[in-house]
Image (cartoon, rainbow, N blue to C red; front, side, top):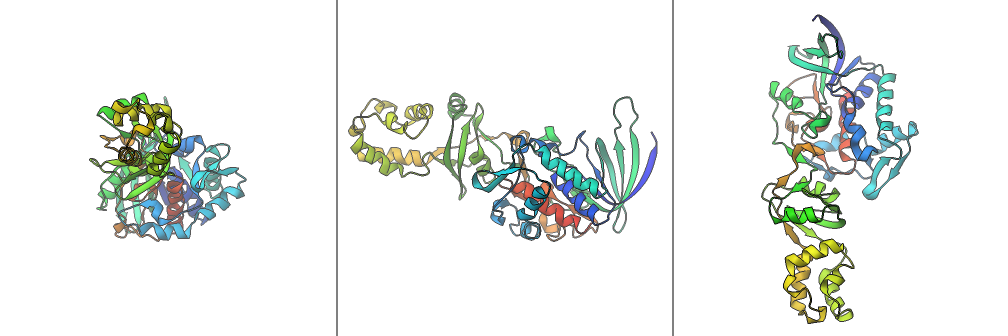
Length: 410
């Protein structure tokens, strides 16, 4: 083992979306930048996002699309580097993209297009990127100067090399706890604690629900069934697809509402979000009175789901014609369709969570520069901060916007 000492203007920990973009911005300003990535490859989360197509931003970006202890914190960064700025960059690289539901923008070909663009921007700006390296210790030597020890794994049959790196600005872009198989960890929080920065409570976000009661068996039987519903919890609601799985429920609408769910909460599912279920069932009684209730509901809902609901809600009346139901009974059933109450036992956790809720408390961070107020030269960007976006390109936009702001000041 031997030691080398290197000097940089800026060192960025993490070669994900925020880290790479920040590096390109800082490098373009003439700063000498080093990006350190613990994993064997950079941009792993970019490559897997959006089913391999990378939902890189959204046409409509509002502060309301983000969850944070301070809902105002994200406003400055989002206004200074907007979705239109990133779209212009994508178009400059002639990357083909498409708009999907709810203003989501995806690569038409591959998420690799976005990663290649970021790496090209870094290369043009003279950024040095090193993977398979682990920061061992971080020490502040003097005001605005940071020194730390890095262990570089050079691969099989090669000794590891220790280097002491000194920089003026250190940017923490390490991500968070979500999807540890892609490099997610709490290292950024460790750094924050080392420098006495406050952390907010963390939990898995944009994550599927699980059940431990009879609902789990119901979900197992319905595994693979999907439909558009409205899901409500804690005064928040979303209307998108739900997907039943062998473990519980997933799909975009579940991931969205999971950001607002707390253990012990019940979620309400409206199975017919674009229909007044009561009026429709009463009208069906008049128009299709000789039909069975399951036959009528199967006109709007998957048959397998209707069969499960029949077992839950009207099994004893399963063979009665619609005309034999009282209007009051149909109204009661319509209320159940409008608000099917389910109580998750928990979520699938960080293993499948797309984001980590909570993180470095924004109270100690400048919303203009992403610099720690109490530590000149120390910056936090991306998911490590207590800012989490909704599903739909918002977390990538936060990476671009926060990375841009820090890149302007490091």
